[in-house]
Amino acid sequence: MESVFQLCNPLAMYKRMKLFLLMAGTFLGIAAPFVQGQEDDSVNCIVSSQTTSQEEQLPSCAELYPQHLYSDSSSPWRIGFSAGLGERSNPLINSDDIPIYGVIQLSYFGEHFFFDNGDIGWHLTSGENWSTNLIAGIGGERSFYSFLNSSSVGFESVAADQTDQIDVAAPSVEAPERDMTVDGGVEFLFSRGNSEFQLQLLGDISNQHQGQEIWFSWGHIIHHSRWQIAPSIGFNWKSDQAANYFYGVREEEASPDLPMYQVDAALNVFGRLTAQYSLNDHWKVVSVFQYEWLADEITASPAVQDDYVQTAFLGLYYEF
Image (cartoon, rainbow, N blue to C red; front, side, top):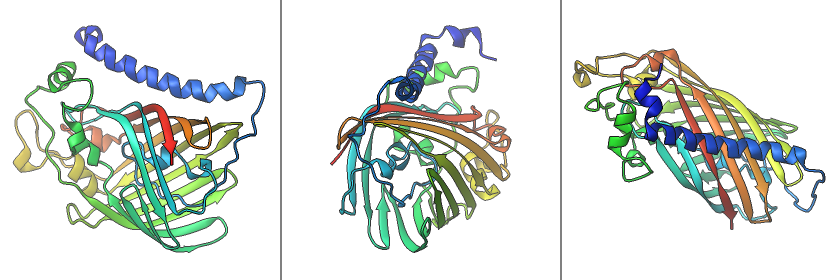
């Protein structure tokens, strides 16, 4: 239960109000097309079967800007940029939430090789509505341990966040440091109508924890005039090696305020909702809200203070 101090803390109230406004922007965008009286068929979109989003991270461009919204083009390149306001919560103790002010879209899809915002892959085989790829990319938890978690980025300083979390852990206790990981494996994609399924079987190829992950997502796309709404649900299973690497506390890292803890295999579940409005062939208003429920095996760790990770973003996107 939150303390009276937390409820009255203006910094805590500011963070909650900021997240509420981002969520409100997303859901207002979803409601708007259904209260409009007329449809506008002036925007023509095509559906692409090329989908290569990586395990959930800071909201990926593939999630914010699905390819079927883009104008028909023979170019294998996709280049764009979004600017706006967003935030991803950080579940680790005494850690800053991660501000999101913009997302760069840079991808290339050739006949076999593709590059998608830092992830690389090789197309193996495909059918009329399915495909199989080899993929590799940086691990999904990178944002929790990266330079994005610096007090120089965002609205709140380190001291402010520690005050807001005073009932959770002492300011002197910090989550253990972790190195960047690279995952690689096989990806299966399947589409039927406006529904899309994605399954990734991944393993640590950077030799950091030698663990495995399974990532699955199902999404459904709703088109209405210039609007597109895309709800999706999914899960991310982590082996004990992978879960323990990111959320465990090793013996040499333990202290009286941070006891040693071994994380078992864990299953996280998430839901995501995106809404987009096409202004013209290049400009779009975009929004996304995602909520991930962390497994009990993870939330029991003394290095973790929250049982969820939530992401919200609202902004303007331009594609060249």
